[in-house]
Image (tube, rainbow, N blue to C red; front, side, top):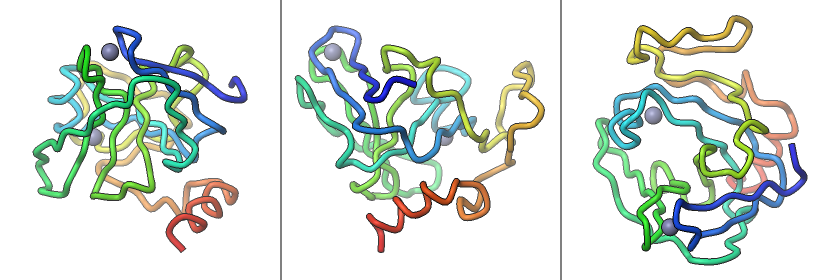
Length: 155
Ligand SMILES: [Zn+2]
Ligand SMILES: [Zn+2]
């Protein structure tokens, strides 16, 4: 992975840089993610919001309805509408960066597959990677360094 991976929207107005590696990378197969992306799943790199540096074009937050009713704000380019990241559960300290908007998404493969209960049947998951029917307990899965970083923002 590049030290400070960069990414942006489709029109180029929004450009951003991650100041470090993410905490963890989710591949989410839930119905919300399928609807909102129009695809089979979403790839989210979880990282402290303070480590997401906007280089140009501040994206605008739009609230999304969710199946759970918990808040989900998606940050989109005001020019082209590309969703570059989001905040779940009203937690603004944590950013879920959409890995597909990075210049090199190959650098951040998923660490876990979640909500596989709604995974489309023709997607085969790799063996050896954790996969959960719904959500999971990050304490059992995240590296110690990521858990320490999370404690630093949530106490
Ligand atoms: Zn754009
Ligand atoms: Zn999801």
